[in-house]
Each structure stands twice: as structure tokens, then as C-alpha cells.
Length: 73
Image 1: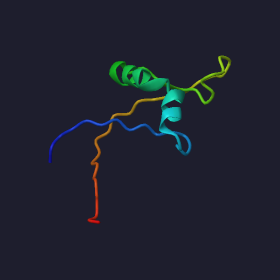
Image 2: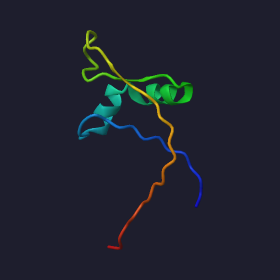
Image 3: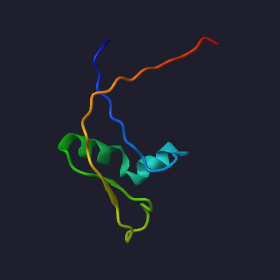
């Protein structure tokens, strides 16, 4: 089994539009900074509202197994 790293983010809600979900997390750059520097990940449910307070996510390192299962068509 090849070793690879992956990042999983538990999002508090149903994600229908991944671009909007990434925008509420500050974009890919903010996610990369939070992962690389062990800072908190900020979630702004209303990113366009400057008075909106962010929710902060903590980082937890875990070892997991990711399986991809497909069935022939």
C-alpha cells in the first residue's frame, strides 16, 4: 500500500457548492497556511460580512485508511 498524506476537514453542515464552502474557510491558501503552520482554521459562515465572527477549528493528526471502491459499469 503506497503511503500518501491527505487532509480531511469536517464541515459543520451539508456542502452543496464546494467553491462556496472553500470560500467560507478562507480559500485554499488559508487552508494550506492552517495545515502548514498549525494555526486554527477559521470558518466564516458569512464571509462577505465584516462583522461576522469566525468559528475556529482545531487540528488533530490521525492515521486513517482511505479506500476507494468502484464497481464495474
